[in-house]
Structures are given as C-alpha cells and as structure tokens.
Length: 110
Image (cartoon, rainbow, N blue to C red):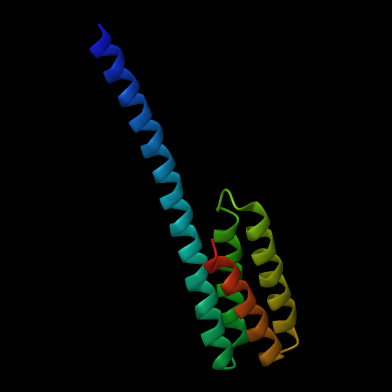
C-alpha cells in the first residue's frame, strides 16, 4: 500500500513537472518566433521596405500576445514594437532600427 502511494505521488510530481516544462517550451517557441519576426523587420528596413517590415512587426506583436508569464517584460517589448511601427510610418530608418533592437534585446531576455 505504501509503495502504491509513493508511486502515485511520484507520478503526480512528474506530471506537474512535465506540464511546467511544456509551458516553458511553448513560451520559448513564441519568444523565438517574435525574435525571428523582429530580425526580419530589421532586415526589411535595411532594404528600405517599410511595408514588409510592418508585416513582420505585426506578426511579432501577434506572437507576443501568446507569451504567458513574464508579463512586465512582454509589455516592454510590445511597447517597443508599437513605437517601431509608429516610427516606421515616418520612414526614419535609424530610429526604427534602434527601437526594434531594443525590442529584440527585451524578447531575448525572456
């Protein structure tokens, strides 16, 4: 009987641990998706294509919304993405890239 209880507790602990690992992996995947879109946006701005950059910024924002946990960090990154989109409308390449680099470093910290 005691072995059965120990086994049940161990199984339950492993299930919780696995669930937490799965959530962490999902967060990492979404953060990596955001990072990839930001990097693509920077590349598009370097090619003077603000329309393509905007598409990647929008995709980064959507992926960012799916990151759970790290709410304060995600909010900072999202704020930088929004600023970059606004700056991009005025076609100020250096400022847009600087803001995207700021967002990039924030999302890499997750």
